[in-house]
Length: 73
Image (cartoon, rainbow, N blue to C red; front, side):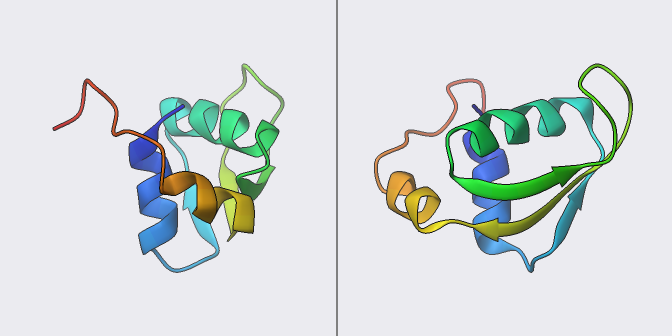
């Protein structure tokens, strides 16, 4: 999971559109965890976009405990 993607969702206006494959994969994980509501324009493994419409209550709660990614400053 990418903490940086979760932070961007929390700080930005919604809906928010992502096009990077790395961000889209992170959003698939966040959606599976119930942390965000997001729709995808293409099946996994194909180029597309992800549109986040909501940071869920569970996602906001989880942000209190999630540590930043080790590979990010």
